[in-house]
Length: 508
Image (tube, rainbow, N blue to C red; front, top):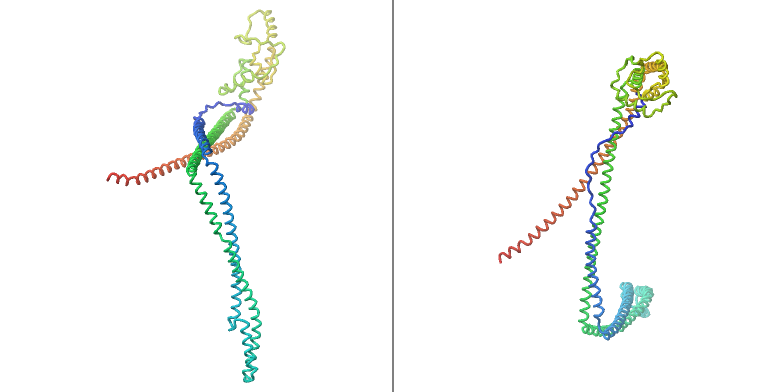
């Protein structure tokens, strides 16, 4: 068998019986239950809106009489004016106090400066220095002093006169100090003028009048306050219902997202299983091809051609004996013959007639007279019988179709030549087929190795996905267990707190 025939046979597909794993049913969240809950909440909100509308109408009709409202409005305006005046007076007092503080600080600094200058001397003012200088001059003018005392007094007079210059600046500072004291006195006087007593009295008077009006409208105001409080409570309940509705929708959205994720995971899982299955099928097909190639490459080359030639020789020459036993490849030979019979187009000779062959031998005698025999030979020459399978096999071997007995002899010679040629090249072609088969097996084995790597990767991927899923489930179960433990602990604490009360009750 040729390598091309091996390739063609290896392309035939094999049906595989596939075991389908039961699919996991991913249930979608119940949107009808969500809509039912949302509908109930909407109905409750509608009822609350009706109550709020009724309360708002009651608030509109529960009002203070108009004269009292106008009086209250006037008093409120007056009170605002008084408060404004109080604010202005307060701001003015603060400004005056800031000025007093600033002047007082400057005053203290000036006093400290004078004290620093006069603390080293016994003189307080420049006049005292002048008196001392005059007294010393008078003593010198008497002429009764000793020269030593007179010189000492003259020296003292010189130093006092120098000191007198410093005390001249002290007098200026003293004048400034006196001026600052007058300013402080005036500012404190203006603080008294900006007294808040009158504004405070006006404030108390207006407040008292407003309190009297409030007493007159106390019941009305209480009713309004109750209505406002009830309306606020209804608004609070309404907000709570909206929160519940949002929570229901959010919970449904979370479930739907989980549903989509589960669907995607299931689809991905199926795709991975399908990919692994296809890889397995491909691997089996390649292994089958390898087994077939190995089996075919071990068979002698030209086996089918030799089988066909010898069958044809037996057909044309019944005395021919087969030289090679080919029982092991009869099935392949028949298959090859069928293949040729289906695809080869044969050009029939003009004088060849296809008829059903009778059971008698092709070269058997007719038993007629010589004359009749001649006529019979003529007739046989005209109607030379060939079966379609014979025509197909001869055409596949490239041997001309015989049209007479003489041609059949030539056909037998050609068949023997073909047979000899096939046998001569059988060993060489067998080795070539084995080499080509080994090369093809090597290529297919590489494909199998690559497929096995892919299968291993897919297996690892599916195992990791399974472990991740199991881990997530375990974490979720742990969270649920923790919540249950917390609930049990809370119940135990409540039970422990209630036990003393029960004991006391039992004693009583």
